[in-house]
Amino acid sequence: MPDCIVVGCGFVGSVAARHMAERDFKVLVLERRNHIAGNMYDYKRDNGILIHKYGPHTFHTNNKKLYDYVNKFDTWFNYRLKCMVNIDGILTPSPFNFQTIDDFFEPSAAEQIKLSIMTEYKGFTEMPVTNLLTDKNPLIREFAGFLFEKDYRLYTSKQWGIPPEEIDVSVLKRVPVRFSYETGYFNDKYQIMPEHGYTHFFSNLLDHPNISVKLNTDAKKYLRVDTESGKAIFNDAPAEMPIIFTGAVDELLDYKFGILPYRSLRFELKDIPVDSYQPAPIVAYPQEKEFTRITEYKKLPDQKVKGSTTIAVEYPVQYEPGSGTEQYYPIPTESNQKKYEEYRNALANIKNIFLCGRLAEYKYYNMDQVLERALELCSILDTVYGLS
Ligand code: FAD
Image (cartoon, rainbow, N blue to C red; front, top):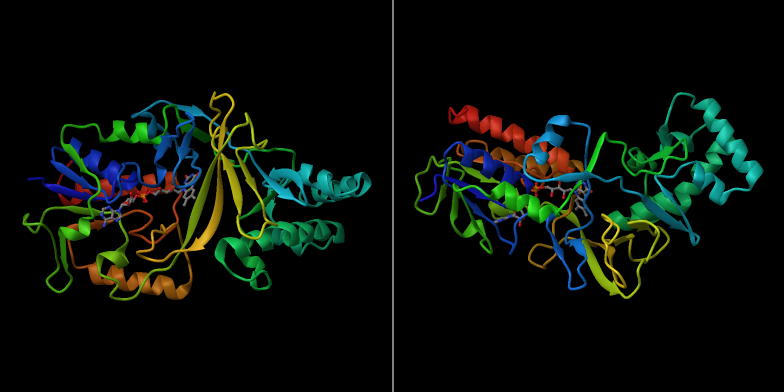
């Protein structure tokens, strides 16, 4: 009989399982899918290329504690992701930078735009496109307007399934334009990939005599959650046994307050008999009608395979429970957040269930952010159960 249940074998579930196992709990991890590693799962195709099943993943953080944590369980190496965008058939860096100005403007106009930016934004390395769209200088506005019409508006509309004319510039706050020729996608201090892949890293993380993992198992079948009496019970185990839940809260409570909506993705995988398909691991196609980007896994990271490559074409689709689509991006509207709060409030008086992770918190987290949440959860578990 276990004395701690973990629902979900993704990043949060695996970190929490390891933590409890190291504190002498017999941990049973239940995972609905047929593999460990959650959305970070990777595997080798027949052509020998390692791919990420749920979309391209690069670990990046400024937090040394998180960097040290992942390095305890496997070897990681430095990897700086480079992305490009195809506009009018021309490949330009993403985030957009001074090269983009050179790519789309006549040389003299390009020089003037760059000079205006360097003068006006002295001391800044980048700025959201929204700031540039309202700049007092018409040259800078023209450049930003070009990017908005040819990329941001189209890409965002496709990604979220909203007509282009309804895209509000305020949703683009986070996407910067670089004021240099710097081409790395992320700015973080630590940008790394696991030497043997994410699944291998997870095998090491879960490799502890106190951890058992049961795949192809929906925890819902074994969990009884009674919000009235404040009890969450796994099978016939004692009611106080800790249950760490990293699945979706609306599923957990049988959608009693309605479905929490998500945007999903469909990946079309193609093995192609060429050495190289595109010049960067990820290329975005804002002007294509159906798909948003193409990932060439052979370059994420560089893999020494001759005569073949594998690409994933990424199509944004609506998430529908039970249809085989995955919950990828929560849709952060006020009414969805309210609905989520209803679920959390209903579960608030159940003291032995701990909700954590992108699904349980209905929040988009990068891997470093979700690892931080998992480590916070570990401290909470230590406090609640008097562990150290
Ligand atoms: P998950 O990894 O989803 O784990 C939850 C697990 O619980 C799943 O395996 C699920 O099957 C299981 N589960 C759910 N319900 C049940 C149930 N009832 N019974 C049993 N099991 C259940 N982050 C980065 O930092 N860098 C990137 O480059 C990056 N790229 C991304 C690309 C895409 C397309 C997406 C969508 C996300 C990306 N992320 C990236 C984010 C990253 O995937 C997440 O931060 C991370 O996977 C979240 O971990 P988690 O443990 O919360 O969830």
